[in-house]
Length: 69
Image (cartoon, rainbow, N blue to C red; front, side, top):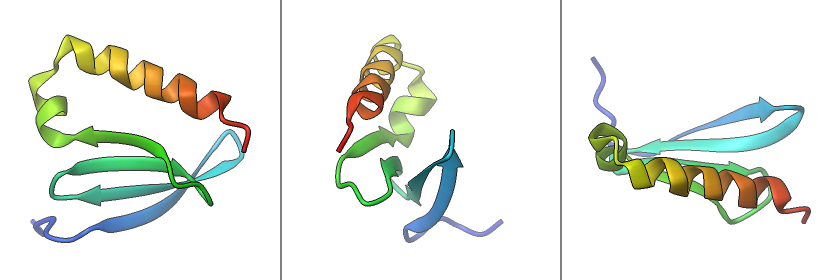
């Protein structure tokens, strides 16, 4: 298996909108292409399954969806 020791960037289209997905040793981030702010998720939070994580994730997604810039 190849270790994740540096950021890995990929483009993904969601409902026809381009996003940049970055996987790194700390976690992942999903940002609308051409924008600076996006959703960030640490691996530790994902593994722990924190209830607050789901609420924060949904709030972040709502903010992303509402961003029209």
